[in-house]
Image (cartoon, rainbow, N blue to C red; front, side):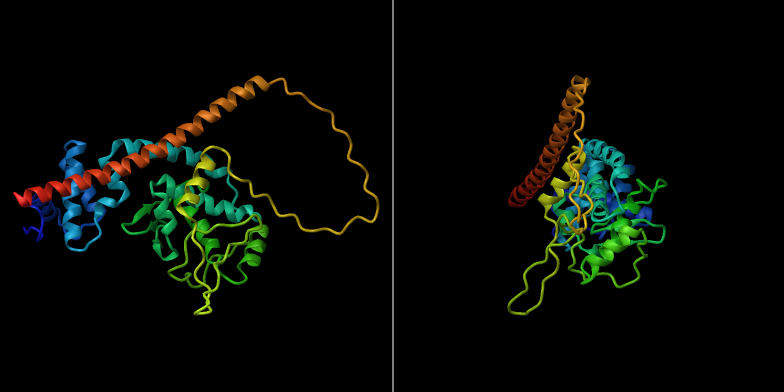
Length: 337
């Protein structure tokens, strides 16, 4: 049983407990994978504050040795923050209801729908918008049973029985078209396959490591391209969807204000004969305007709750950072004494 070099004295006893547990469970304490830490927290029990301190000790030991702190994994963040877990559970339930209504076929709404569905699944899993924006294609791994692993520390997105709501299936739907997005002829190929519902299974190479996982699209399905570098005469990688855009897209879907991305109309030749004026439609006054107003009020309340949840999420993140800073100051004060 060893103590990592540089670990503060008041952290060493807690680390020894974790090291002893790993030895008995035949696990590796350093570096420890998130599942190991999660099992340790569940078996050790204690209050949420105790769990947070244990995670802080384990994270500190990993940082001292240049390893990725396992406490950043989403399952561990939920385990030590019950309010966050409840808030994400509410968001996940709302997103699960939305997924079947978002199209995956047609042009360009099938393309945008696949991207938005993938964004919603990652948001429901608790991945922050800046981290979603920074993902590249090589951050995604599909394992044999259909499970999808995202980023490092890995976020596990498991397969489900419902094909319209399966989180892993939603991500695979996006990966099926993502391979063609940076392709020179990708726009034409995607339009054809999504209109004809004949999308083939990707067999080509995975896009380059710097290819962002999510990009923006205009109303015709085009992806904005960065300017050519005048020194290298090469075009940089595609522009990634910003964190602000990710947040805006998720909020728009949750509030019912997402763009429909209607099918692009093809130009037609002008008619040779004078078209007849459209018939005058009878004006119909809806007698249920009062009920419609009440429904709109409830809709606005739901949107406000969504914004409050986002503010609480930001507050939790700031609180975690402040807590970590306080622990660092305590370490410095202890060492000085």
